[in-house]
Every structure is written in structure tokens, then in C-alpha cells.
Image (cartoon, rainbow, N blue to C red; front, side, top):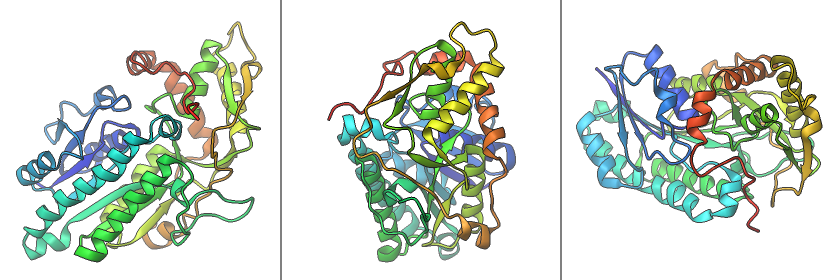
Length: 352
């Protein structure tokens, strides 16, 4: 039976990928995750008892541990989701982002290169490393145009700079050593199981509880939104049919201003949770000082993955957002467990 190694598979996007893979594919999956604040095994309860699934707690920066896993399980592919991923946290503490996203990716690459070099010719040809990245590496767009795979990198936050660096290392290992890599850059993900420091789950939970809904600046920062299940389908398609050395941008073709997102969430909570004493929830919106270096607009041109690999998103934003709001309303146990630690939905990124 074939095996893949997934790093960061207890996080939001990685966890969705793991659940999809175990449900739809026949190969084994080994999940290596450090279990930081955003890693949550509760999100993987559905696969925990499956004989084709194995969880290992560990760090991509631990080259010896990664090497041991590669030697033991002999995977045909590695999918790297492991990363520190929140812009505001990167403002408060850039060091962790450099350590995981840059140094950790380097250590992972070195372990994989040693493993791949020792494979026979057929297995070397078949092996793939898929590195999952973000559209934030491209910087900020003006009112027109979209990011393509050839857009120059221009990161504006410590988070995006660390991801840009990791992308460059992955690319360099292909061009220098021949390692068969694939890189994906995605737009903003949303959906069930997302840690509530991110915009959509934070606004859902605060709206339900009658807490302020902080909107940065004028609320007109625009993002392209991608349902997490669609993103993971795209990653699986790239892994199956992408060309080594290529980059594939994955977007939802769904641009929305942050303020519009918050208002839609308010309307959904008002409808799905009638009788709230603080309704209408839109009255909770509070404009706050903008995030330092806040990029104005992101938009992804996903034409390449559509033309070459036949992928396109299945979920539109309106149905996807309602599905997401319903999930958070129906899963208080998961929310309580992931928010019972240090993070209590306070604003981050105020250290400058």
C-alpha cells in the first residue's frame, strides 16, 4: 500500500486535506504535526481510528525525526502544510515565523532530499513534494488585475516574508538538486474547523456572544475567498497531475471587502440564531485602527490550474458562508476546546 506524509495535518487546511484523503483515497497517510495552539486533534476525530491513518507529534524543523519517518514509512509524496500562518501573530512575534516557515522548511527539504536521493530511479521519478503557500507572498494589488504564477514576490508582513522565503527554498531545491517539487499559492480560506483568530470564525463567535466586531481601518480591504474543501481538492489534483517545478495558484474567484463579509455574517447569525438580546448583530461592528502594513487587495487568477488540471471551485461564497456559520453554531464543544487555552479572541498585532 502506498503512503503519503503530511506535515501540519492537524491545522485548519491540513486537517481538511487529511479527512478528504482518508475518505477518498486508498493509500496510507502519516500526519506529522507539532500541535501548536492552532493544531487540534479534535478536528481529526473522524479519521483517528482508521488503520490507514497515523498521527505523529513532531516538528518539521527536527531533521532527524523527519528522516526517521521517511525511512520507516517510505512515502511516495510529502505535502507540507506546516507553518505559522497568522499575520497579526507575525507582527507580535516574527521570530516564530522565521523559525518554522524558513528554518523548518529548510530542515524538511534537507531530510527529504537525503531520502529522495536514496530511492531507485522509478521511485525518484514518481516522488513529489507539494509545498502549500499563500497569495500574500505577492504583496498588495491595486483596484484592478489579479495575481498570476509569474507575479513578482513583494511580501509586506513578517508572515508573508517568511512564506516567500520558504517558497524560494523549495523552488531552489528543484532547480539545484532536481527535487520534484510542486508549489501552490492559495487565496483566503474559510470553512469549518478554522481557529477563531481568523476573520470569519472570530466574527461568527463574537456576533453570537454579543461582543464587538472589530473591523480594521475602513473595512474595504478586499480578499479572494476560497472554501477549504475546494482548496484541498485542488491540492490533491496538483499532487496527482501537476508538473514538477511548476507553481499553481488556487483561488475562489470570489472577491469581497472585509466589511461586506462581516455584514453577511451578522445577517446570517440574526437569521439562524433568532432572539439574541443584542440583535441586530450589525450594531456590534466597531471600526478599529488598521493593521500595520495591511495589504489593500488580493485576487487570484486560477486560470492555469483550471486549464491544465481541470480544477475549479464547487462552492459559491453565499452557500459556503452559511454552511460555515451553521457549523460554528452547531459545534460549541469544538469551539470550547480550541479556545480554552491562552488565546481568548483578543486582538493581536498591536505590538508596533
